[in-house]
Amino acid sequence: MSRQTGSAADGAQSASTGFRETFGAEPAGVWTAPGRVNVIGEHTDYNDGFVLPMAIDRACYAAAAPRADRILRVHAAQLGETVEIPLDALVGPGSAADDRDAADPDMSPLADPAVTGWAAYPVGVAWVLQQAGFPVSGADLYLTSTVPVGAGLSSSAALECATGLALAGVSGFDLTTAELAHHAQRAENIYAGVPCGPLDQMSSAFGQDGAVLFIDTRTGEVRPQPFDLAAEDALLLVIDTRVSHAHGENGYADRRAACERAAEFLGVPALRDIALADLPEAFAKVAVGLDEPTARRVRHVVTENARVQQFVAILNHEHFSLPPLGHRMMQSHASLRDDYEVSAPELDLAVATAVVAGAHGARMTGGGFGGSAIALVDRGQLDAVQDAVRAAFAEQGYAEPQFFPAVASAGARRIV
Picture 1 (cartoon, rainbow, N blue to C red):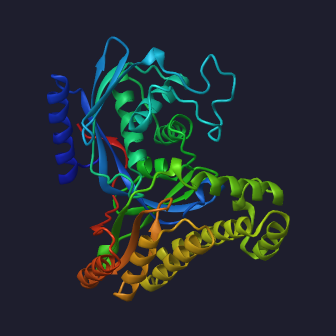
Picture 2 (picture 1 turned 135 degrees about the horizontal axis):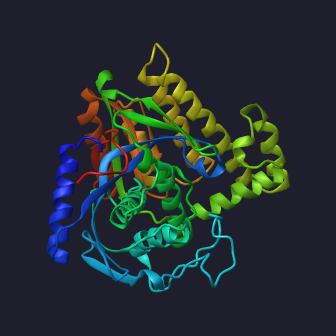
């Protein structure tokens, strides 16, 4: 087991206490999985590209115990709601009554109509694991989380990964880290109906203390990179705009579909296969053959992949410095705002204001349409940046933003 930090100890205690109060028994264990901040590399994961996320010290905690009756009972602490469903009654794509290919994560969702909203995520994990042949037993599951919901920090992936480990733990089977991430993503794609790529679940599963993860989403290779901002007397500040997003209800699916159309039109497996040097020609072809907005989607993906690789090269350079990292972050945000069109006025204001107030760079993080921005800030400038963003939001009549430093943390694991 990974070392247990103070916050993890508090989360474990909260989950254990909540389990006892809710179910009147002792849990068999407590498992946790973190949220994530994507440092750079947005909307590249479902294009087989490169991403650079890190797990953070905000996490979902799952206290669980087995049941003998094959009932899955899940309680969500923050909502005060409980869902109960027989495992043998779960309905989803790829079931015996459905001859479609359940291995295809892009297929349309066909979830049990009785399981909607938040419950589709943990129940979807149970369904996916069953479909994959794992011997999932009945369980009581108590979920509590410190990951802000709708903030673009992958609260759903944290829930899915914590649930997957808890179900494996009480059912008596093992999941590799790669299996955990894969099945958690499939639960979100197929059961919850959100067409996300593997970024979020891989971040939550593979996270490491003090490191960002350079992930090749085509091969599944994960290469941790040192990210010791404390040594530079700096930090990565999360600015939660408190503008909630819901990927299943916004343009996320449209952006993914546009990228897939463009890749097919260009005759490549995915946009990852377009080299930066070939971008002008590809842009012109797509603009004429499809449409100009789709060409701009292509430009974002190709240039964002290049920015991720440049960011990693800077991290590993013997003369490492923060301003070049901040510059790539600003380029990324501009591309997400103008070419991919997934930003929001609150995100744009947070980014611009943070930089004027002294941040080395800032960008939106996550799928967009709301959520959080991140800013690379010298510790001595922290108060000035926070005060400036808070004042700018107040002037525009926006809700007061929330702030916290993102600390690179360990991934999904059992803690009790």
